[in-house]
Image (cartoon, rainbow, N blue to C red; front, side, top):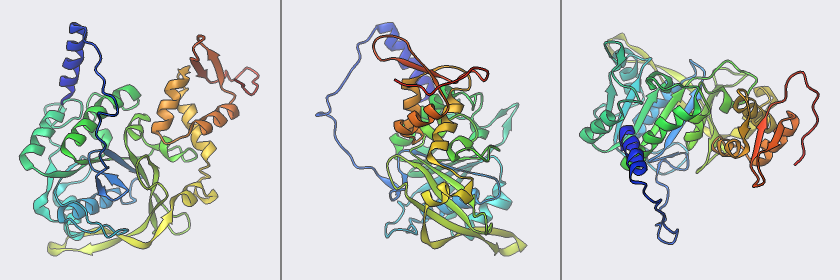
Length: 360
């Protein structure tokens, strides 16, 4: 269903004053989650990989493409990737001198890897998520058996969508998510980080919290502080799978024919305790309270927000209600009861006013 289809459906519902339709859970069939990478990246859902430039996000993308194009075994399990076609959208790397050499270096089946050209048509990019998802779905049907789509980076393909407006991001990603589910395709969003080195990984992802909230799994790419040649890919959120451990890796140079020099990712054998790295004092002291505090500062920066909305978006970002409560207390958040039905509003205190810890 395209974005326009969703809009038309909403218009028809309003015009016809249709009643809401529900199903009892007794009528809803349970189905197991299908995996692209067992317990890490789900089929039919959106995932995200974020990190600073130069740490190997694109090499990771090439590795994922190789595994899927060959149906190869993942490094931490005896389970193979479901073999199928891969679509790559890359606005930053050239397909001839960068992407194809990386795919060859990692052993990808090139016949099953497809590239969407980022050419311009007048003043408009040839592909934008807010306008062209119908075209993408048509291409998926033409290629057939598309198991993976990589969008690198997300910010380059948002078109007129304001990347800092949560509602705008959620709207376009909702349609993208529906398409992923319909075709049983994994969609990987690649994102850069902002310069807030002392904030949490989730809040360092460029744009609004809407993109990581809409993703079922979010992975952070980072380097070791003592051995920068060692990099990590770590789950900072996984609502449906393994959020405990990640991987360390290094980038290895590869010489191809025609004098082409490229590189590939090489995973180290042992799994890495993600929480130990992310919460360690040598990795910017990413404490759980800091994550929740940074989240509150971001969501409340423009004014008061309903507590129900805060809880919903916090859950999407993998932050518990108890962590939000403790962070609110530490920040001296102001709360206001709007009616007698338990509707509360939270806001940040004015910088000039004296504050006290809030109580319910």
